[in-house]
Length: 153
Image 1 (cartoon, rainbow, N blue to C red):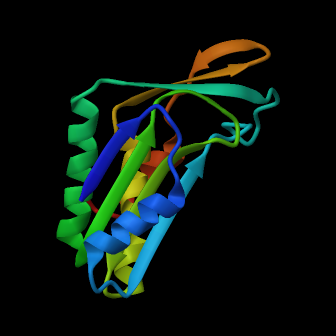
Image 2: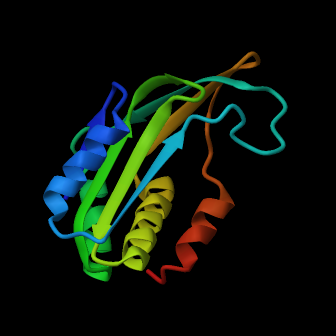
């Protein structure tokens, strides 16, 4: 299990290689990367120019570790990886990577989806988006909470 928070970008191939090295005899590795979107909401009319993420060091890593541990308790995983960026980012930049390795693909897919659903709604990050209209803190969305319901936590 690996959890990392950083300001700079990450290299997907390096993260993948680290999962392969940790996982041993994996039959499946699922990697998800999230990008900064130009429009946070589908009905948003003004394009996002930057997104700034803030966090509380120590507390955030602990929360991400808890998410990865929960995934490992639910599925037979050989490795997990979460890399989350903080600071100021432009649209189209990578913001998050989640990886899960297992003997079988179903466990890897489900675990990666589980970790992303919990990152979106339970990880202590605060997001501020800038547009030509100014800056505003991003509010949580009902759809993020609805995504958690299927995991029956």
